Amino acid sequence: MTKVITSKSAPDAIGPYSHGNAFGDLIFTSGQLPVCKEKGGIVDGGIAEQSRQSLVNLRSVLEAGGGDMDTVLKTTCYLANIEDFAAFNAVYADFFKTECPARSCFAVKDLPMGALVEIEAIAHRK
Image (tube, rainbow, N blue to C red; front, side, top):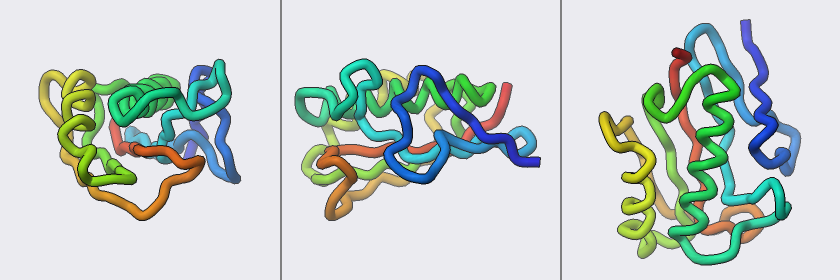
């Protein structure tokens, strides 16, 4: 049975979707934009600040679903500019310090709200 995941710490969805869904022991998150819940918009700064906020939002959704960053099996990362890859990687490495999950990372033409990054994950519950 599917269970909808809603995080009180993550920003509200900007469309008709949930923060994530759990099915059995698996967690599937929606893409997390670098939106600050308190300020209500994309965080100020460049790719490093936006990557950090997207990962903070991702972590809060995972925790609401019974997982955490250590239970992530795979991420898909979308960058508005592939030239940001190195700076994105530096921040990403701060959140995945032990066993890194499988990952796809690629540039896309545009992201919602003019964001520079969006990150989604598949994880398992603890």
